[in-house]
Image (cartoon, rainbow, N blue to C red):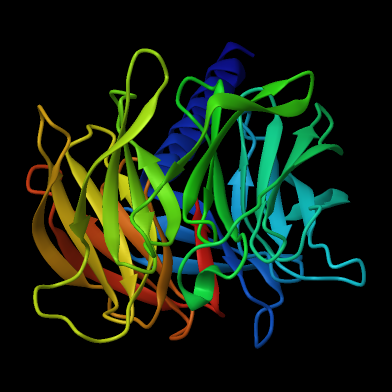
Length: 366
């Protein structure tokens, strides 16, 4: 009897060790897509330790799930449906995250046409940016995964270019302090500041901050020191450093081009991320199809251009660090592939490792 118990313990430990080994040698991630061609919705892939990738298949059928986010507890996935229905609204979906599938739990209106960005904070508040609608939705993701519509932030104004004829909310972010909300509007050419009070948007005393005329802000990332924000401007192909002081006032400090010197072709900058140590910033350029790599000046937060890395694909709309930041995965909307680059944490530079086919991939979520 004793031997049987010991054998059972050994087998159990062996299973646990195998599970731990599997966890350390591969990481699963989800891919959001556009479904106007071959894609059917949300897919799951696997990143192996050596940087190669495997397609694990379709996890959920969904219409234009172009941006994805996870709940803070890791139980739920939230996706936009970047569409305009009969009411001229898109929608937000919530899914239960299971090992080999996604189970649709709820679906609510986004309150505007073509939602293109979604995020969830620690309290379960959900922000969705409606590009064509020119507004931002506030929802709540509850404990069982159900969604509740709470409020809308309506933007007004326009910029100075053809793409800025009306408000076009492109993303919305919870600041690191979890109190301020920053909505990025490409159309009005501004950042919009608010907070949540009684489940409603409340403008901050400083309601907006304008970018350089015609810049077209799209996405942003926060430095770990919580003082510096890097705003990626799609139309100008620039990154603007925004600084916040102890009173919560936001000011623009400097801007730098994401493009190679002398570049004169068409460009549409798309995504931006910063390494967890705050030393390097990466931004994708569609058209040139490259990643601009910058080093952050430690004292001032200004960016110094290090290099441009070809992404080995066409139209790099979105990219993501692997959880350990050893790799960067880049989703190419037009060439139907995801490429993987190994990241040197010391130099910030990238080295191509592998690629895999994916149908109109536009979001990578670990």
